[in-house]
Length: 363
Ligand code: F6P
Image 1 (tube, rainbow, N blue to C red):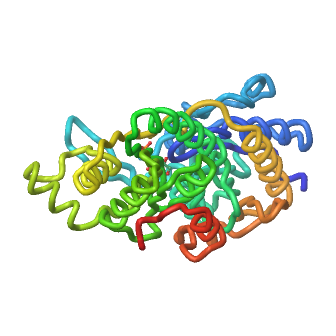
Image 2: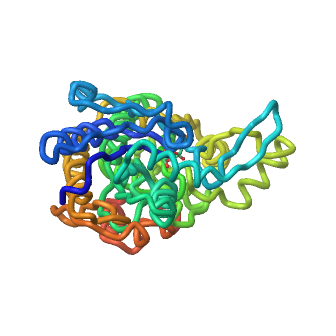
């Protein structure tokens, strides 16, 4: 359809490997296949609140960015235009800039906007769609917990980092006969922990979807010890629910739960105490979000970027590109947001892990 002339692209929420690959693919498709002009919206939706920040994106702007981590557009996870937090010399206030966004998108001449992001960003996109800005979504998060798509780009790259870390931890754990805890990201879902735990040959995996007890974890570690396995590797998601008793013990020891203490350290202390063994904790944190995308993510991101522009050309607004099996399909953004895709505790992957002796701290 020829009524589309100019599109915008923005990246919102936490960054992840593959964002630049999506931007590159979308810009190339827009310019080479459809002859659209493209505007890069800076720092999430900020570039629509303050349009002077936004710039045209040309083929030369996206040259060489396929393997580069992060996003050339910048991003923020504090930039919801419907409830924008402003800090004025320590005074916090919230302002609704959504009317400005719509007005500025018109002034920039945008006929459509590609919104690359996770649950929060897609929700904002849909709300802007309801206010008259035609949007299409591209699903992103290393956590892989967005509904309506089998995989989000960024997950595979994070998984490589986490698996590599577990591989490295293996040798030192074995040498020192230690319990080693590797804490991976996954605020609400255990996809990275489950996949990296299996791929890295962890002995224990703790995820938010499966309730565990320290007692069960310690029993398993001691059992391994009896069978001559003097080291144990535990991979846990940052979002696991710390057992109430462990929280109370921590409060009794320190007066309160120390600000900023990682879940891995909290659980590590409890396990050291319970199993009477030496424990070391490695928190991988943002190393999982940084660096170059894996080949899988480069390909998926490229497919998503191309499909998003194809979707715009067909006026498939308020929809998101998605991977189902080996096919790229289009789904309603409204179906993708609001309900997290969690690990099924009874699912095939958890059962596979259990079959090879991986413990989830629940039996
Ligand atoms: O949602 C992606 C994610 O990487 C989570 O796994 C993690 O809890 C969160 O973002 C960290 O966000 P921030 O960069 O704001 O600390």
